[in-house]
Image 1: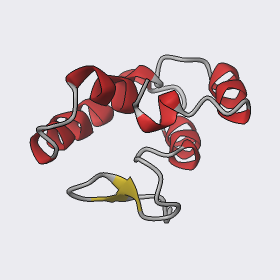
Image 2: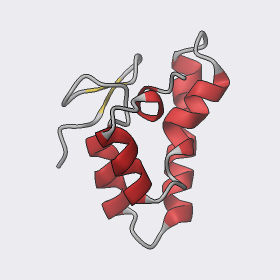
Image 3: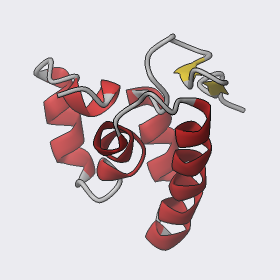
Image 4: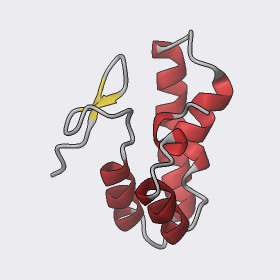
Length: 94
């Protein structure tokens, strides 16, 4: 079981305190839902809706990028962006 679960209602990561889903949890989710991208999207969509209810001040576009936008991005591109210090996809802030 992962320690990188969401801490609600602020949706930070319980394992590293980054905005959830953090890079570690994203990797774990990719592995857990390997071969089931629609199921992953549905799960993340449910999380997005709940996060939008918990954080009504957060811009919808930022929440979309944070919860769903990364899921369609190939894992290699995600690793490169994170390694190069591009945390905009991690934090949901651009």
